[in-house]
Amino acid sequence: MERRSFLKATGSAAAAAALAGCSSDSDETEGAEEGTGGGMDSTDDSGGDVGTDLKEEGDLWRVNTGTMTTMDPIEATDTQSGIVIQQMFDPLMNYPDSQPAVEGLMAADYEVSEDFTTYTFQLKDATFHNGDTVTASDFVYAFERLTASSNSSRAYFVLDSLGVTHETTTETVDGEEQEVYQSGTLGVEAIDETTLEIQLESPFASTLEMLAYSSFSPVPEGMVGDIEGYEGEMTQAEFSSSNPVGNGPFEFDTWDSGTEARVSAYDDYYGESASVDGVHFAVIENDSANYNYAMNRNADIFELPTAQYDPGKVSVEEEDDQGRQIGSYGELRNGATANYSAVSNIGVFYLGFNMASVPKPVRQAVAYAMNQHTVVEQVFKQRGEPAYNFTPKSIFPGGAQNYNDRAENEYPYGYDDSQLGEARSVMEEAGYGENERFAMELTIYESGVWSETASILRDQLQSVYIDLEVNQAPFNTLLERGRNGELEMYSLGWVAGWPAPDNFLQLLNPPQTDTSLDFPISYVNWQPENGDAAQQAEEAYQAIAENPAPTEEDQTARNDAYLEMENANWEDVAMLPVYHELTELFWYDHVDFAPPAGMGPSRQKMNTVSLGDRE
Figure 1 (tube, rainbow, N blue to C red):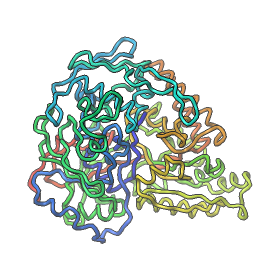
Figure 2: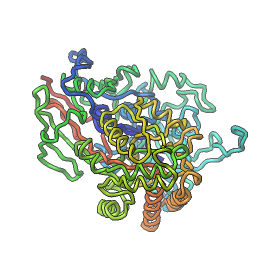
Figure 3: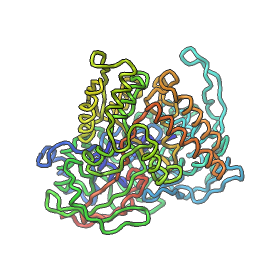
Figure 4: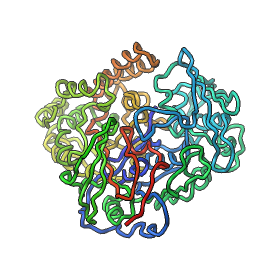
């Protein structure tokens, strides 16, 4: 159900995001993934010449980003890819300026049946980048690709999250009989050229929010021959890398996965035409290189790595009704004063455990050792809030006050406290000691702040019989190792795919965490043999699924189940919440744009950005 908004925490790679509005990640995080945090000294000049050739290239919106994996909406699971896809493809709905309330995008209007199972959309008059008219049949084809293509990473968006009606057939997979989707039976129908009907098996409270995912964007019918009944005009490999055809405000120009991507303004866009000629995405993973890229004015908008960030240089002048703080920051290393915005992002950064490899007492000992307040204040320089629940405050059942009350009064591993005595006790009770230590690898993505956090934790765990080896891996490598069940402990994050707790807590639904699956939603392998509360979590998530309607009664039942899942995670420590990010963006005076709200920069389109004369 979510957006693989696997985030990289605070810092410049998120500048990629800065661009978009800044994950899922998409899809986009999904990711997900918003940026790496500091690490190298601000006087280091490596990477200073990156992108200098752009200074003569006209009215391009220039941003830096991390590595992308695909330009195909149904395949993308990382935020960096999703940011670019977001500019080229328009689904039915959208979060304007990433505010947590959807509006129609390709949908001119819609109706919902009394039982909340039938959604009927009227489409706007739009064309694809190849000149073809966008029709309801193109949406039907796109939904079928998302569901049935072997290239799709998000079939469960349709079959499980939305629960679109469909038929199944029994097939033998790896020697076992399984029910699989029967091609062509999806409850998505083109009533006529401009009317699309979607039939759900049961109500789902976040249907419209779900349809804001770029994964649901239309593609010209029959363009890619990766589903039954279509030979295709091109292969999926070509479509996903060098010739994606969408209906968004920008059209594809070029992409080199390790260097850059570029999109150009689409002249016949049905909505607000882009004010810039295009967007250039510079692929830069290194924090120092990202910082120097921005200081050399090669980026119009950017994030500052934590190592180069000074909270004393922030001046907040106003706060709007979306909670966005607006002001200035400076001066920068290059002598300029930047514009500044900050907003609490609906996301969470955490340490995850492969529960099949890391025993429960060890996981609990790590939770006792961790002081989230210390990490936020000393490592992240107060660029966020300590996390004690997996669900962010703004969407937590009962609101932010209930979140705080639970954390302060009920969190079992010490609120604003590192309880090393308790950590030693739980380890000793499990038979560990100086002569029986537990060795474990913590894999983090390439981030200075997570490296510092890991070092602090490693030193603490030495005294509680845990030898922690810390290794860094490129973000995509970390995700691949996680899917293959090769990680023991790891750092990741999740940003909202839609603003509801189940968007986050699905990561803690035990059946979806099995790394033997093709696309597990998380990598914790939470089974009854790995934790006493696995059954509690599974039953709670089932209760969420059984009370899906947008009614007060069902919402109450879901709220109770959300808290049950949070409690189960506290008990078994599948994922240890660390902090909720404050998304901060910095931009030069020649830039005019509306800063993103709580859904984050990766949900923002760039056609409303305008640029003045650069210095």
